[in-house]
Amino acid sequence: MIAPAATVLTFLMPQTAPTALELAPLFQSHMVLQRETHAPIWGRGEPGSTVTIEGSWSADARASVRVDERGEWIARLETPAAGGPHHVVVRGEREIVLEDVLIGEVWLCSGQSNMEWTVGPGPLGGVLDAQKEIASARTPRIRHFNTPNNVAHTEQRVCGGEWSVCSPETVARFSAVAYFFARELERELDLPVGLINSTWSGTPIQSWMEASVAAQFPSSAASLELVARLRAEAPELNAAQRAGQDPRLGPGSATVLFNAMVAPHAPYALRGFLWYQGESDRERAASYDAMQIALIESWRKRFAAPDAPFYYVQIAPFAYPDDRGETGALREAQRRVLRAPNTGMAVTLDVGDPVDIHPRNKQDVGKRLARLALKRTYLRSDVVASGPLVREAVRDGERVRVSFDEIGPGLISAADHLEGFELVDAAGAVVRARAEIEGESVVLWSPSCPRPALVRYGYGAAMQPVLFNKAWLPAAAFCVEVKGAK
Image 1 (cartoon, rainbow, N blue to C red):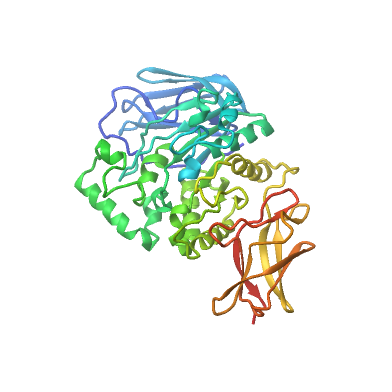
Image 2: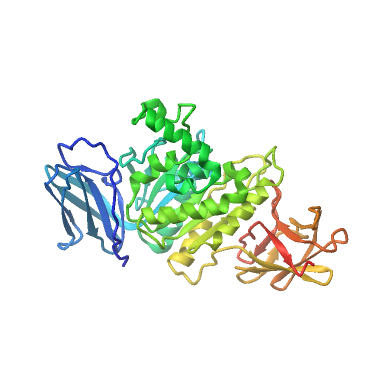
């Protein structure tokens, strides 16, 4: 059981006293509550009144709380093992009945367009075999909450959105990566899965950071200053501004998506986070790993889930016309995020599309994220979670020996020759390396670079290398120093 966390909440809701009982946006019919925990349920009501909550799964599933002087309340309802449908009754100045409530696993899914990309066709959607996928999506234990795209210059406690039950009529609008992740979990674990989708295409990581975190990074300074100035000018945004149509305050501004699309959901009880973002931050690769780790830590704190898993995607191949090594550097920064506890990275070097920044194969991306969860979160010993991850590169005479973790049953090449390895000398000159698999390592050499300082793999923007483990999971892109190079 997940122990209840002691959390102090500041509700940034309208300050006028409510006239009737209200629930926060995620608490609706068809929702999924995290199993085996003390799930926070919150909202507003008449100051001094009492709110009681009852879950139909047990006579003991009951909580009671008094509304504070600001008209705010939060209670915690103990949830059972997975199951349902149940109903939840909330009583105060009025009675609210939430129907068709499932108990299972909840994941918050966020990032930019490749996470926003929907199952069905559209301006930001359409997966491989989309019509077949839609027709077969008869999985009512998967539920999806879509958070509307909005910006805010202050943290919000209210947002729109609703829970949808997975069916051929609804799944076309689901985040494809999130859906294929949930489909694997629902099949393998035989329990309901809830997905909270908070995504916006083309957005940088600073948009998804809370203000105190973004302020740690100089690249956010100008944006934070503008957000503060606009907040001083107008405490409330109009509809066009909330939609990101003010040229001064778009979805790329620091903190504005955290404020509008993440903060309203905290501290909803959940199992973990999925993240697919980075394409918009290629020019910030030098600080990206620190920024993502700071985001991870702050989200865990906001959701009172200090050990929650955070699984993310290393960006796919695409022929960026302006690439000067930024893409490879960004992929290496993403790999370095693995030093943060309880993180995992799904690799997409083999399922990208060099001519389309939005690869249609979202099935494998979702499945690879699910492998990470099944192995590391749900402790399935029969699952290989990852492709090879570089451990070190060591000079071995005239060659360099690269060793890996997560090799599973062994290393394999998907082509006659290993491609994608490069050697870099101390002056920065890059040469293509010859490469061979030797046991659990790869050995590299080139007469043009007898004393390499660095080894790179998968560094080119559109490069699609061929190193896998025998579970056919691709090796992650990397750039590491060669030990013993001097």
